[in-house]
Image 1: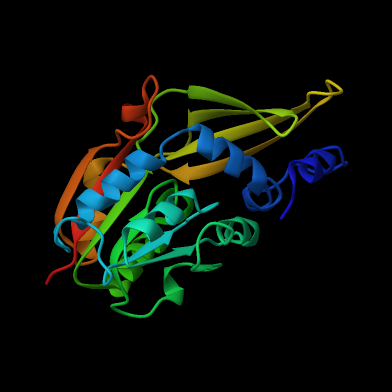
Image 2: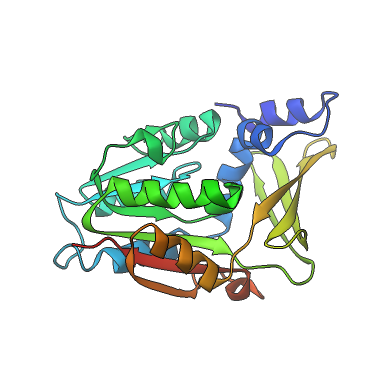
Amino acid sequence: MRTLDAVFTKLGEPRATPTDEQLYTTLAPLYRVLYVARNRIEGQLATVERVAAGLVARPLVSDTTTVLELGCGTGHLLAELESSFGTAVGADPSPEMAHIARERAAHVCQADAHAFATDSADVAVLLGAVLGHIRPDSAGQAAVSELRRTLRPGGRVVCSVHRSVAEPRSRELTRRVDGYEITQHDVQRPADEGTFEWQVTFEMTHEATGETRRVSTATTLRAFTPSELTAWFERAGFESIVTRPREYVAGPGETDRAFLLTARCPP
């Protein structure tokens, strides 16, 4: 695992503008630090438990419930799911993210939904920009169909996606840890129809020396309206589809930034 010292050294090397994939690999330790600072884990866990309520008797701890988290990142939510359900399995395409997640959870792999057997999970979780990274739309629709395949009859899915961006919006998060002040500043700007550009800048300041190093990247993500995402899940064969605001992230405008979708496989 890369330490923060190693990341700081890496940022001092000459380099071209990194790709989104390279950022997820090189800067995974920063995501680990900042994700905790967002303090959203408890809200995410409560969301998954509500979705699973129709599968298991209360209390929502069941030795027979399997939860699959796709795009598990550094494993903060996955560790909580592991404590609340019989089995929690995480998957992430980034090798460094998956490596860090294994420090917290027992079942983590570098993969996507294609790696899992048919009817192998009771609940699928995609909380983040997972579906937004999958383009074009035909590939996104195929990914939702893969979700349907991996879930058992009556299984549930919960996902969050970004809403369409009408005008630029930004936010900033700073945390001090292990001798560094780390700031993430991100800006979302409207792009082509149905997409937005997401520019992310990380700044690391070594508190002992005052030296600051930074790196930026920009990626284009798919944004959704509730009706668009509902149509994807309907075509994949899901039912009982509901969309609602994403309420577990605090801050001005956060409930308008993204929304949740929950759905069920036919019994």
